Length: 400
Image (cartoon, rainbow, N blue to C red; front, side, top):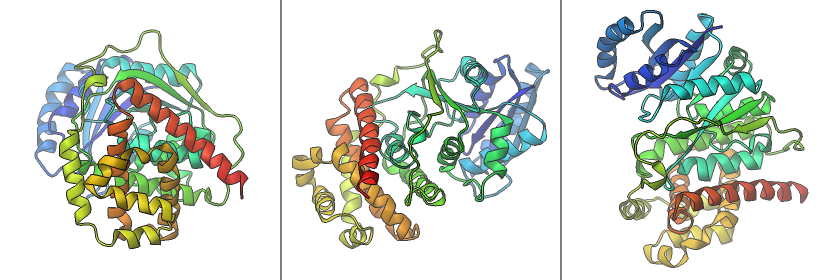
């Protein structure tokens, strides 16, 4: 069976062409689909002009560029469109790589496909070294909520990565086997990961060394945070996990570190500072000064008085200096749980997005100041927080 590489992108200029070239150099890849999520700049034109020359260099490979079926969509829409086209054309398995990656090599595709085959998995996911100040949504939202409500997938270290391979069987299930459609935005990775592990499909996570991409500040990640948090809450609700989390049986997740991992391309991300910390702090305090009714919003979300008081205190720069270390895993996990439960009970109302965003930024800044002095410390702290979330969930359920 022939493998296809799908590259979802929007407003990425010529960057997806580099990713496509690397994929085409991987022997198992027989076709590349570049899926544009209706770019608002000249990306689609640039890609259109470059495809014919690329096709001449790779005459035995199929290269296509097309737009998402839905307009005004995002990453999810591009991924869903790519899956639909791949399945219709009979490709199996299917590989995804994000369109803005600067460190990709052909070995990524090879390792993902090898892991899929050798481990008998339905999904192979990449995991990477990362900057201590990168991946703050994964560290503080998706991974702890997975550990709390979907413990069967708690071994997955990086559930939001867009570098993965999956079988056609799993692809069909994700598109057609649910009572709800996949989201057409940043929540797509959450949807894929949660529903794969809930259904019991085996997953393998394979080490791909490092991923470099355009850095984004916490402020620039607002939409991604909202969509990822919102989708995780909807999955918790849809699968009835507020009422009952099943007893943890066999965990169908395997982690693989290959003997010959890909080369480390570019500057070592373990030493990069993806966020300008002082600048981000100033932006944060400017943002919270404009928050409307934060105390009322936290009360409506049923955040406990103690945690509500801590959050409101940390909105003050002087108090943040003195007390930010108090927003650690032992306080963040209960706060995150209460925010998620309250948001679900309040029917995902957009009026809560600003205060949710503010709470996440607080945790990311506290983490940066007190737990992310190095790559090793940041990874250890992330692992501890996920483990604490799992144990917290177990205690909570045992007390009911």
